[in-house]
Image 1 (cartoon, rainbow over the protein chains, first blue to last red):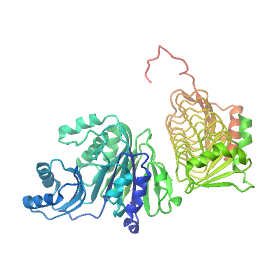
Image 2 (image 1 turned 45 degrees about the horizontal axis):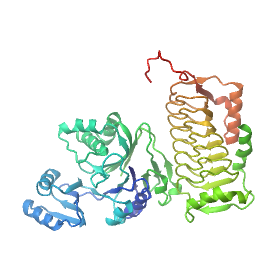
Image 3 (image 1 turned 90 degrees about the vertical axis):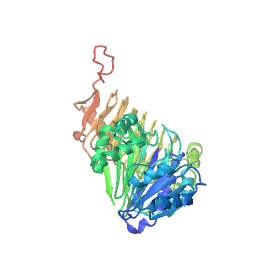
Image 4 (image 1 turned 30 degrees about the vertical axis):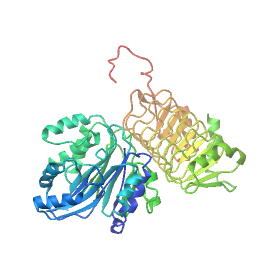
Length: 297
Length: 246
């Protein structure tokens, strides 16, 4: 499982974030031909509003009826942009209000992400096909977290694709395999934390989000992760205003960082960064094992 | 081994008088370049090769078996110059994982940093890394020499069997774990030694070895600044009375 992302510090580049990120994603197709996903962090909605990225099993899904039913039942302010089997619902309903409604009326609809800044897309298929289907190139925002997947330990389905999310405006992509995901699950499930897949990465994602919900900041949560998560990993995490990168103590899974005055870009390999503007003059380095790298937007 | 290296290393730095044969990987498939290096290079004796726009591609100039200067103008991906024999390969950038792995002879030089497992299992030749090397540098080294201008990551020289590693900077955790007959020379700090690795006094032969390797790599340090790390050889034989906690 492999990841890539860019993070634009130059506002002019934010409008071409998708253009920069798609070649990074496609450049890692050999490392992950099964599935691809992308989280893009956009402008923040007003506090009463949330964005929900939704995934339906079939491209024939009737989004119009969903909107009408939701309007009838809860009378919210809403906007829904659909793209085949994917849609982003912007609505003045908090997760506590929307999630039970979705579960009751659309139990087969998969909620990919929720928050005030995150949009999330993930799908099985070649990265180039997934990127084209949802027009990733048109995406604008402050930062993206992308992933191309070669499944090693659980099924190839859209739900098993990365990025994984938990809570609001938090996502994680993973290259590696954890050896104690079930131990983590057994710790979290009695606390009411529900899992959607049997994927190891989901355990890491929910563990870190649980720590943050308990009051840890991102850095403290990651430090806890070093103690509790066992196995091989390079993790890349996105929040509404931060990006974080860590590798396990053995650093078996690759990562390379390119920093310029305008952007930070991270990938498993340089070959998916080679197209970036001025990358030849970028500060290039490999993150050290068990070191935390955090960038703030 | 020394005579082979003397004959090849200095020529990597020497400028070519003739025009090189240029391949642009933005235009020419890598497979075509490697096929040329394997099958046609012997018809172009004396010519040097220049490879443009490597852009992190894997397997650049692997398996070359000819005395030729190859210059790669940029960053390489996995296994650059792997299994090298006789060739002098200069990477004018950073190298990805496994640069010069299983090298048999010749010289591979990296101007930037090298990722993990640089020079893994190299049986001969000289690998020069001007920047830092990642984890597991020289893992299972089998007779090649490695000179690193910067520091090396953890688990370097793990189970290294023969050859020399000269580290001008610092070493990470577990340096030389389960070493056999390979010898490591370290100028900077050692975060920790691996199982069965120990610091030993430098002999005149050690000073001479380090001086020669530093000269070949063109690094300006004195051999007097280096310490020798070698195997304590306590793991060479099974000890049934041990508590068997490893």
